[in-house]
Length: 207
Image (cartoon, rainbow, N blue to C red; front, top):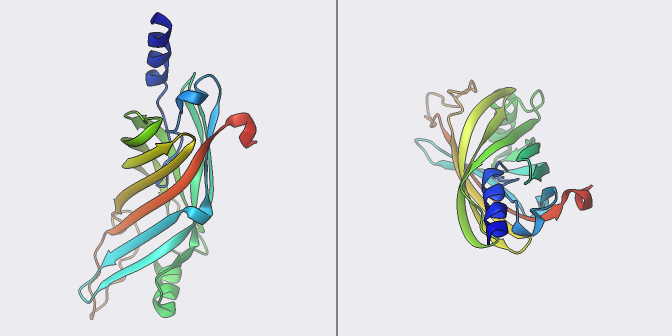
């Protein structure tokens, strides 16, 4: 009983994180407590969707996940890695609007990546079923880092993970241009929804 208590205390103290979002190293599964672990996110099963309100309509679009590399050592609490979104992949279904978004707002030719670097987690992830945690870290957009804390819902089935998060980005406050003109007024905030599928692996197996 004492040994189980010590293991549980070590695991609780080691919680530091991910996710997508998104999402990430939060996933110190009990099965991997004794060794370093990694969270592998499948880009093909990851959806990064955005919506921007305006006076005429709400613009909906999506981005593609470029890469995700998260390593986590439950024994020490150390985390490394990042979740990288391909800024150049952003599209809303209107070629003219998308060209302006990339040229004038995202400047994606100059800033081709949007990066989330996780640093800390609050809460615990169950080895099965649904859990909600808060993940804090740095969100790099348009070449600048911003501190963010994201609520992440995790549904675990053994090593398999389903991760969901919703965030509101004050992009104008963060230095990006508002696309409004004399005919249309756009919100100064954009909403992002991320749904990702991944799995936990040992750090050695992920190499």
